[in-house]
Image (cartoon, rainbow, N blue to C red; front, top):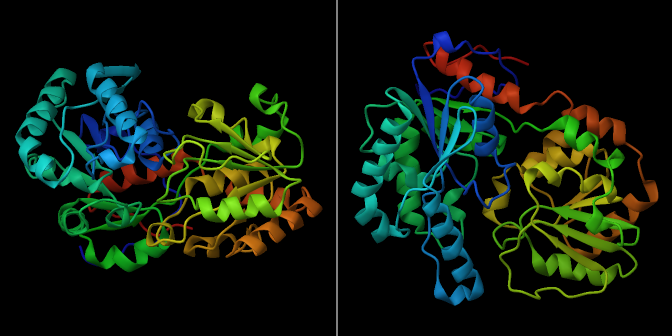
Length: 404
């Protein structure tokens, strides 16, 4: 099918009787054991495991770690080896996690493909999967899918993976094109990317991010996390990974310098060099488990998205935006395409001076507009997103009528 499906935001609950699969194998874009579990693939698999057993295969890397990364290089190797040593782990009913032994990089993927295919088939037998649906959340999964042609697969095109720093761009673009042509369904979560690339897919579907609304909406009324209690107000918070491909450290540092009376709270793991920003009004709280992350944003007066201005960000739809909106707190962000769906609900700024000015403005207005921000995302659950995909797959022609 070459026509682009209509944008759909909700869907009916599927019946497993209508699905021909006995499980789902997700080649994830992240590692279950050390990445934030708010990502699209984690959330979708969590919800889909309510209908079918899921095997989440930890990230088949897109790039080879470089020694020049210093301590981060060794940290990556230690984390990956720790993941591999775990084998298959059942983390809850009908949800297992597996870390196969692979070699990243273009040459490494080519050499390790037979082994990865063998490891995948072994895992399928171990779990008793005979007719699984394969979910590819990363383009490098194509290496394996070529050898698993007897199974249907879904391609999750949630980011411009070819823009990820350090990857072999031509190779990733090649994988991406093959996946779009062959996938039973290509799932987009950013409308800009969907409209641009949907016509090149066999069967595209727009599935916007969901949000764990009740958790994040209750953030401001929950007990303040212990490691925040000594931080003075007013507070401006960023909750998320601090990585060069998404986060703009220069913009953030300039804003910090312009607002010495505001205390900036960073909640998330960082791949930047140790000591990248040392200022008395910056508080690095480090990575938190997803089950705890929701407790932090509601105890800040304003929430920030100081994203890097890259093609990666231009084509993204951050999960963080809806989580922030659910708290009701005012939001200051750099502009990106997806914000057109949230007009009047966020403050945008393109440089340090205007970003600082918007933070000042948000602190002055306080909770004004909180109800509107919450209402915008109140009914956008992850359950409805997973149900939409499963119902589409169960519908026979892989397409549902337009809704909403």
